[in-house]
Image 1: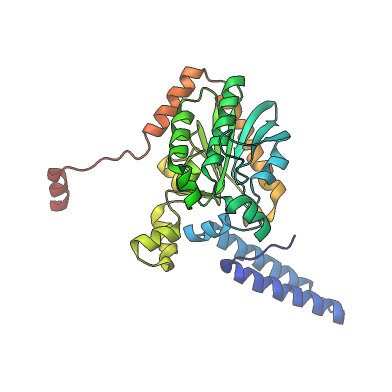
Image 2: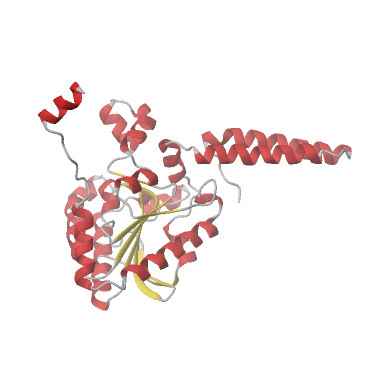
Length: 330
């Protein structure tokens, strides 16, 4: 599969182009350039490693949005078996931006709720660019209630820039749909795992993100607002998106440090889009490990830990005036 390069990968592409020219020249003229080829390949490896070990927050956002990155249904096909999609919210309709269904992973039967993007214009129109309507969240909740009825764990695969903000969403009460999901997921009596596999944008992500274990892929992001929207609000200009991304602390490492997520799942070097199978293997292993951990808990303990987990988010201590003055004098 030909991988579309990102802007910051241009130094690697240039080295790869020169390597190809060197190999072609060697073949055409029957000249031994093995030492030069080996040296160039080593330089490519070092350059790639240097770039990917020092990615900025904005560069990780670009990777999270890569059109060739594995989407929810790609992971469904690789991590799960016996997938059966269920449709409709029994109120308005079926939202194709949020495929949901029954599946099995390892020894566990579960309900899987997802957010799905498209790779081309036709599929993006079908999936509404991964932005769910209220009926998507109501469908997800319907299946979560089904999971509760039959004692099945819930797995949520999050990948959305946000819930759809158009008139149709407002007419059908998008804020209410997300708010109800937050309330009901907090009280759901079965284990819940949420995984941010790409973009985790605003309330659209949080609407299926209340979970006992919140996992994030290495190059995914999870944020209250997109960097572009944050830039437009703070700087009145979207061109400061890279600065906004740094300020938002939206990368996996930042979120782990702040206690927003519980585990970071590693990706293949260069991002999950470079090796779908390996990325899925890492995610599947993490899901099975976390399911084994939380399914062993009694319901009361599970609910208490979930409540405590989310109550701790956003806590901070503020120094008093006297303490600040003392610190300043020191």
